[in-house]
Length: 336
Image 1 (cartoon, rainbow, N blue to C red):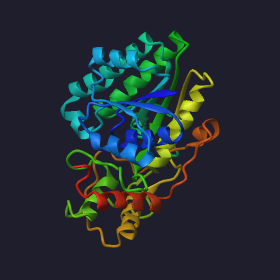
Image 2 (cartoon, rainbow, N blue to C red):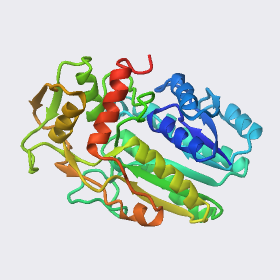
Image 3 (spheres, one colour):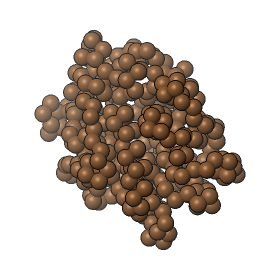
């Protein structure tokens, strides 16, 4: 069974390619490498001992995308490709809308032309906006506070409109909470462009000496240690969820939506302490003022995915930190 993976050279995409290959799928990757490296594709093949097909193509390149689908009989698509930096999206919103939304429309049109109707879409918990209670279930109201989040919500809305209009489509929307960690081999992991936006890759870069200290945004929240609490999920657990979602699409469910998270939260200080344990040295940090819009606590209710996808997380915070440190210490400058 051939699976097209858009953005398959990226952080979550590359880990998902490993899971696909190890589960007997044939993989075709389309990635423009604007925020990923081809080296990750080479390492995926080394780790699995299996080949995949890679095309350096942008989803906005409609002609080449259609040519790829003409050359390769694809049964389903996992769609990761997209720009993903919240802060950057505020500064260049038109580029985000064009790349993420227009790219998805071109992909869906190409799929339809080639009679491909199964897609797993990489969404995000960012579509819930600022929540007032936890845990977060899939039926929470949806709202967004930045252009990146709006592109995810717009794509979800496109899929929700497409489903009743064309019932032969089967679509799974997966809302990720905070993916962290790396493959246990230390050979692939998160390699963000520039300064990381998210906590754990920043902690990892501080641990390896690329930054002087971690900025902790607020320590006066109503949480056990005063720092913000988030649901962190190991990227290998997250990648496994995509295999289960593909299997779900085989049952012709129409449109389904799932939270992928652990169902519990860890504070910023818990993450720093766990990372110190992993790297066996102190992680310097400084307390900063709260950032506007940051919630005190946010974590998923993954019950629906547990029941309907037969999926649950297996890895602990210690696993996340140990694997992230193994990746970062073996690759202090990422794939470069």
